[in-house]
Length: 163
Ligand code: FES
Ligand code: FES
Image (cartoon, rainbow, N blue to C red; front, top):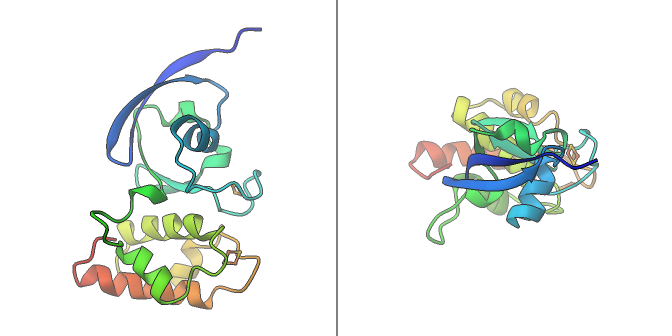
């Protein structure tokens, strides 16, 4: 049977794109394979780990459970959207300086879930950070440094650094 293909229109990391896309293509595969943005990681591939988290209209979503067709007309932001002109964003600095990037593989998902949090709540408490990152799994070390990184990023953001 012929695959249905649509022209997917979205704003990806601030730029409008139109791509011929099969209806059954996952957003994760669209980002990594069609567009070539490999910062978004495949972890469990089943909605369990959070490594594939991106922002859809500012809301953290699992790209392994989302069809590309579902983001037609939406804004999608990936880890590649952060930082500009060679300067790290507040979250990138937080994860780097506070050692929140322990393995690196889960980090893009943690950072994008945190970006969604800071967009709706710029001064989160520890509990709010833990709650917002509840769908993201660290299998190697733990969450203390990650929570510290997000708190530090919130402080940097309050001081004027882009989140
Ligand atoms: S790869 Fe999507 S939740 Fe694990
Ligand atoms: S920091 Fe990535 S699995 Fe622990």
